[in-house]
Length: 638
Image (cartoon, rainbow, N blue to C red; front, side, top):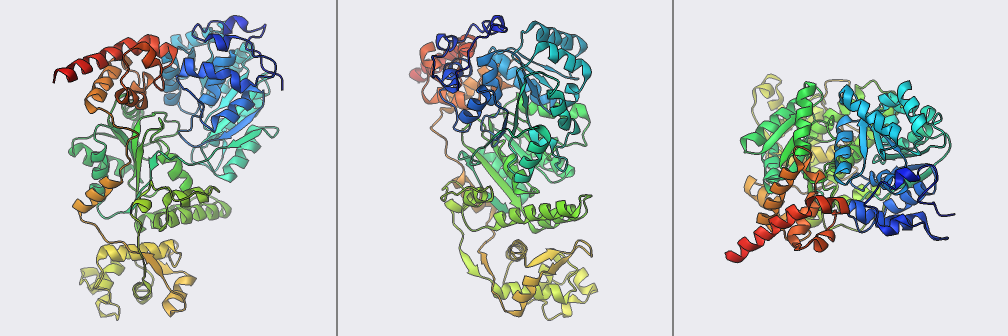
């Protein structure tokens, strides 16, 4: 394929305004050069990156070759660069459809810090700002214009774009086109019709959603003809993966936060009430934490999100209403206080940690109550039976992941169709569980369920098995049953593990249509009859002290030692320079950490640091070099 010229007669005056483009990027490619080879100088000079990530190169090559593209890449893999780099390199206007105003605002701020002319056209702007943006579009002064789908469908917006002649339409968070998804935005389905009214425009759709059915829906609704499709590997090797049964959720979450005191984090919660409760726990322990959920007043919700995005060390406790499009690169941990609804949701949500490539930690707490709640939500939803069946299968896969005895990463990647060796970077690789024959205990549990009428939850059944004379047991005469007290040798925690693993194995199911209690599946009846056996992971309830010690030993190791005093000084300077914008728009944590690992003494050495492009070098190098110089002098004097 012929190489793409960096200058075209109709847009050369626009492209040459980028003063920071290096000489190599200004020259026309030689015959036979690939477009992908010609952009690396731009990558280093503007974005400060030495190389593309493996998943980015083929996507960029297809875009530069003029093809329509669907890119399914995991969160944190650098999807945004797949349209931002072509916008800078090729010139002209790229229109980005994004579902969240906050995301547009943060991306525009990040691009501005690199000297890239970008703007958003949104209802959050005042009238004067939108007039300035429209004027910039008309003058050809922008490389990227961010719009919400609702804005794109307006006739005045289409008239503006037809005159501006954008060459690329980037549809971010493309899974919003899926009607049955919780992020569905009906305007996304209008995009092909609107694109057809913009002559010669290419389309790139991007999402982190891995589900095959979702991909099929995106292809059907966004592209009139089959585009180039790229599905990247889903592994995020910098994330430490851990899952644990709930035994003291407050203590478990506080232990995680303590390992990351001073870091930004996200705690996902199953209900709105839980966001306030867990934020309260963290505030009591002197963490900077805020709740976030869709029921909050919009100004309060925006204020919480802005604090999280703009400040260091804020922990947001949120429902799934928070997160889509959150592009904060330095989130050091993500926890699930309650079990998410599927493996896809789990993988997308933990993907908000460690987007800068530095180590980050994840923890999912789960319990039998979570499993029952999620199944009830599916069965009571308004979805048709086909959709409910798919959602139950997804839930079953997540439950199996929670109780799996083998490497978390192996199980996860196998779900997405990828093979993997044991990773050595998850809780089960660090501390492999022992499997034991629990057939006798399981039969006792199942017998208690049958003798109480398959009407009760795990809490009541455990009290029966342990012989606890509660008022409810006495009222129902369950203390006279043959199973009363037959399981006294096991603790309540051990019984909860048994019931949970019986549910994970499909031997018991919640009776949603009846009393909501636990009842036997067909395999459970075979187990109670003794025709099959039951093996489970041995799981002892740790003390709070041993849990903290064990969890601490599993925390991810840093890529290299960072000098904490220097890092603190660099972060303080970063906050000062950000002047109210998100701190990471100056430099992400990864860049600051690298500065502590090999402190630069000159601009030339600063230029070699990851994430330091020419514009940021000119704007910020002297300020950070002064901090490093002061730290050196102070260290020498000690």
